[in-house]
Length: 185
Ligand SMILES: CC(C)(COP(=O)(O)OP(=O)(O)OC[C@H]1O[C@@H](n2cnc3c(N)ncnc32)[C@H](O)[C@@H]1OP(=O)(O)O)[C@@H](O)C(=O)NCCC(=O)NCCS
Image (cartoon, rainbow, N blue to C red; front, side, top):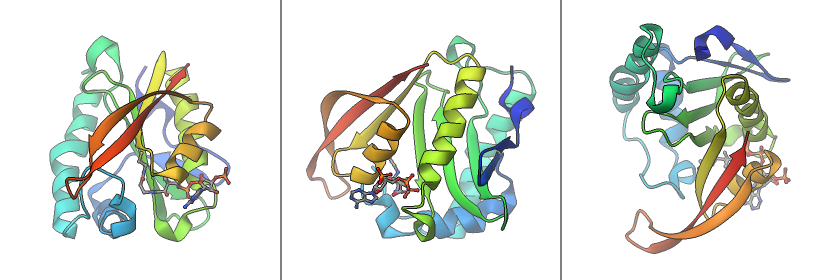
C-alpha cells in the first residue's frame, strides 16, 4: 500500500502532505536557523536554492519512483517525506520523514522554531507512527544527540524506547554521544 493513498494525513491541528517545489522558501526558512541544526550532523542551509535543489534531486524523484511502483528494501514504501502544515493557516510548520531507501526505517523531524514547545513535533510524529503501522512497518528507529533534550522528549512521547549509546562527531569535530531509540510497531 502506498503512502500517497493516505495523504493528506490528518491530525488534530495539522495535515501532512507531500512537498512541492513551492515549499523551497519554507524549507530554507526553517533549516537556515542555527538552533535548528545545532545537534544535527550538518550546519544551516545556505540558500533557498539549496532547498530547491534538495527537492528536485531527492524528494520529488522519490515520489515519482513510488508512483511508478518502486519500493524500498523489504518492500518498504519509498515516498515517506512529508510536510506538516497547520490546518488553520496552511503554513508549513514541520518536516517529518522515515528513511526507507536504506531499509533503516529511521524517523527524522524538524519544527519551525516559531512553533517549538507547542507539541507540533509530537503530533506530527504520532501521525506518522499511525501511518507506518497501517503500511505494515514492523519497527521505527531514531538516532539522537544526547544533548538534544527536546528531541528525546518527543521520542519518549511516541512510546519509543532508548536502546544503546554510541559515539558521534559534532559539526565542530567534537566528540558527542548519540542514543538509538526504537519502537516496535
Ligand atoms: C526537537 C524538536 C523537533 C521538538 O519540536 P517541538 O514541536 O518543540 O516538540 P514538542 O513540543 O512536541 O515536545 C518538546 C518536548 O521537549 C521539551 N523541551 C523543549 N525544549 C527543551 C529544552 N531546551 N530542554 C528540555 N526540554 C525541552 C518540551 O517541554 C516538550 O516536552 P514535554 O511535552 O514532556 O513537556 C525541535 O526542537 C526541533 O526542530 N529541533 C531542531 C531539529 C532537531 O533536533 N530534530 C531532531 C533530530 S533527532
